[in-house]
Amino acid sequence: MLAGYTHAAAFNYMKAFLLDYFKKDIREVVRDLLLVRGKWSSNISSQQLSDGFHQVMEAADKAVQFDDSLADDGERGAKLKKALGRVVERDKNSIRFIREGLKQVNTEAQVMINEAANGLITIAKHLKALLEDRKKTNPELLLNWKEIEAAGEEPIDQRMIAIYKRIHAFVQLMQMHVRS
Image (cartoon, rainbow, N blue to C red; front, top):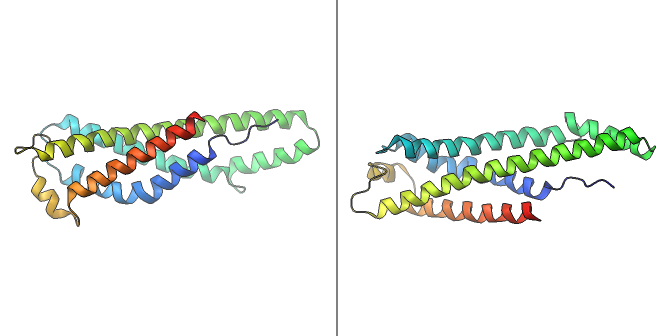
């Protein structure tokens, strides 16, 4: 018996989250406001946030390419579809090819999910630290909060809190799907 795509639901949730939310709302706050406009007291914190951001951006790009390759007209999808036709004819090599292909696809999907989740966790940790720093009378991490606040459409605190909550909920969803 063939297992199929074991991470399809989690992968589809991840791809939708990254394309619909991350590449728009999170990118605007994290990259455009915090990383580009922000004046950081330490390069280490900004570099870690930047690394997490780019890790997730890379995962989003990989997810699109991966998904496209699995479409019926994609490279992998066409090969698997062709092999499925031969399974009906009881071709043992086709069954082995499909099993190996599915195993590889499932492994790659899980790696992408984990990479995206790790990058999002890094971003969330830094957002939380920035929110705590913002509450101080003399912020230590980011030195130009007023400039950043003026550059955004909505209050930056509210946007960062909303992003943090969404990332947290999304990571929990991914953990639930990857475990099952």
